[in-house]
Amino acid sequence: SPLHPFLTRLPKCEHHLHIEGSLSPDLLFALSAKNSTPLPPITSDPSFASPATLNARYAAFSSLDDFLAYYYIGMRVLVTPSDFSDLTYAYLARAAREGVRHAEVFFDPQAHLSRGVSIDTVVSGLLAGRRRAEAEFAGRGAKRLTVLFIPCLLRHLPVSDSAACFELMQSKGYFSRGDLAGLGLCSTELAKPPGDWAEIFAAAGRHGIRRTAHAGEEGPAGYVIAALDELGVSRIDHGVRAAEDEGVMERLAREGVMLTVCPMSNVRLKGVERIEHVPIRKFLERGVRFSINSDDPAYFEGYVQDNYCAVQEAFGLTVGEWRTIARNAVEGSWCGEERKREIL
Ligand code: HPA
Ligand code: ZN
Image (cartoon, rainbow, N blue to C red; front, side):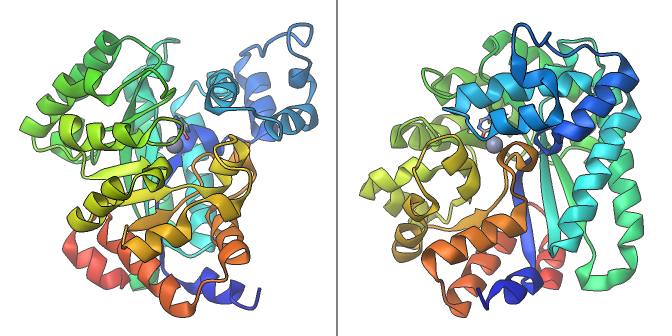
């Protein structure tokens, strides 16, 4: 499309990127060898024979849970602070090349704690990766890159495990120091209503911690409302199933709640058949704010620019519509007002 150079230049914010989801099959195999972390024997899953077979398997995910099984196996190769730092730097360098000015990066602390990797290892690695990237792009003024980190609690584990993880992060002072910018919630969605995490999210709210949650990806529009009412979130990750309910969209529009939409992810995990079925047009018409994001780019084979281009191919948006999307993404960010003005 003739708009692709414009889309690269457009100042972008990415709010929905799981750093563990940026682990490519090539790096997965390399780190597995370096850290002596065994992958499943190919007798039990032949997809783990090589990076190529793994990539082929990724192209055939049937659902969120089918993807998550591979995602949680893959991240077992992340062991040392430098593994997390290198992964973070590599993502940020690519994002900067694609015109991302502000990135808010998710990570899954419980998935590392459960296999004996400490929270200090994970967070110190993320912070080191950010330091390296911010230093490298510091000279670019408004075009520099700012980065925030958001830990996500995991819905496939008991709520008590989420509570312990939140307590641990609080005890380390990560939120009060600003190392971590807010709290998220992800992993399997069906049969995991947001309200089960209400107590933890209320505690976060009392400490002035910003909150977001994955909702309305596979789960119904009612889970989007539950995340707003019972978790006090100021954003919704995915939220595409809100399009099934006019009342829910009306509320999102009225309250200015931003959805962090991930078009290629929705196609790969079979939420929709094609990008054309992601409710981009409906959200624009109803005034529902959203940003466009990659989610797990190594698993869905598309970084943020690929997602912008896929949306443009499918919807043929105008320059004006793109400017609205970009402005809403800046305004829905958790950076300071000064930085927002600088990006705009
Ligand atoms: N949904 C829920 N959990 C996740 C996702 C997602 O898209 N990506 C990584 N963890
Ligand atoms: Zn996600």
